[in-house]
Image (cartoon, rainbow, N blue to C red):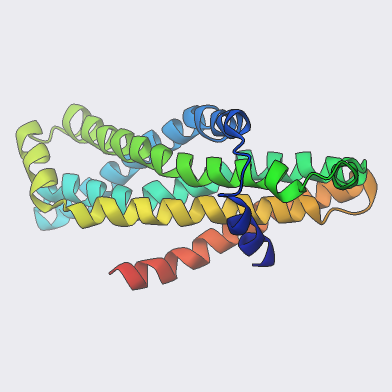
Length: 234
């Protein structure tokens, strides 16, 4: 929490590191795109398959599209994206900053009158906060398309009925809540991962421990905070 407050206090102080922020946005967003898309696609597909199998018992196969859309936009899109980014990007942040800590590069920044929070953490924090909602938008779209393909092409659902049921019950609040969660998840991943990197001790072994703790703590915090954010929003 102390690191989060310090990061927020340094965000709007000059100089603005536009190039470094863009570099981190590429690392967090662009390079995470393939794993997020694959995860979302197969999540939507298996969700449609399981929903169809269950709803068939009650002659409610037409509601599969609604279930896939609501599940992806409200919960699965932001949560799975947050977990994937935590595993791919959070570990990289912790390992990179941890290596800089044990090799005394962060201490060298102080001797150069450079604040390491402004120089190292703020760009990563901004990149994660901005790019995670964008990744969630693509994850939602791909997940819904994956559910559509399975329902229509494999299970034989009427495509017009699938699309109509999806739009009839999907509200703006469903999309909005998922994006709000994504913003918080981005903050969580960046803050916890950078904190673990900054707190690294014990050489190469310490870097490994920091990386593991960053991923595990970020993932657990995302799952726990998801409940409280959902309780507040709904």
